[in-house]
Amino acid sequence: MNAALIAIGALLGGALAEGLLLFFLLPMLKKTGAVRKNYQGIDIPVSAGLTFPLALMLVFLVYIFLGWGQDNYQFFLLGLTVISFLGFIDDMLGQRDTLGFRGHFGALLKGRLTTGGLKALGGGFVAFFIAVTLGGAWWNIVLNTLLMALFTNMMNLLDLRPGRAIKGYLLFLLLIAAAVLAEVDYLLLAPLLGAVLCYLPVDVKARAMMGDAGSNVLGLALGVYAASWLSLSARLAFLFFLIAIHLYTEKYSLTTTIENNKLLKAIDQLGRGETND
Image 1: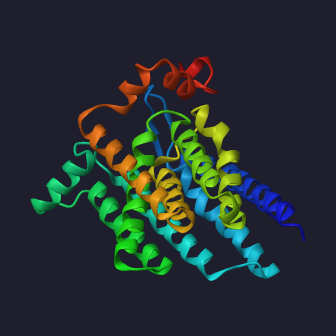
Image 2: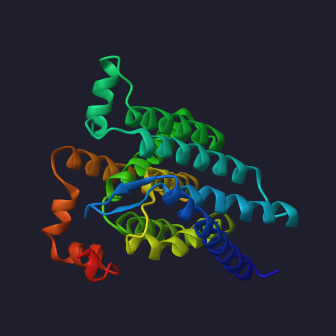
């Protein structure tokens, strides 16, 4: 079968699986009280991003039945599932009195583990696990671990307004794919992309929050794509950018920066409508 048609089928499969999961999950989250106030003070369902690894699993099951599955897909799915669960814990139990890498690791040094600290440590182990499965020299494993960990946290930093994290995900996905057009594994990429595109209207219209359960998934996926497909020079460029962003956000508000830049603000507001201005 034509590879392009297979990739399109995988994209549609991810979107269909996501739509089905959202249909059942969002009412359940509301009924069980899994809601949080968004930036406007409105209670909406949180952790809707739990659907991402589940949608991916459904599509990967089809891959297995059709003989398309690869061993690395299972490691990818395992990593996304674990990182989503860690995000879910922080969404449900997390306190917002400790923020940022400095705050969470500072608390850990004092003998207090925060849910954010658990997410950071667990996320680091997940990134290291996947980096080891990708193989290479020790420095390559370190580089790939840092890429995945920092991409994961960057998506957390972006997920403060409706649609912002997904727009960031799509932008970086485009940059990664453009850098390695011939090397992209579209069977790996397409199902999650389909799920994200299906979820986008829900997020951008503030009908639900993906939470860390979703933003963690998007960030780790970007990190895996970068680690798997990019050249050494491209990976180093992304790493320096990610480090710079994290250093910047330790001192300055990303939201304030976006609000003060006309272009970034226009992109950030795109699709929200009047209710989210």
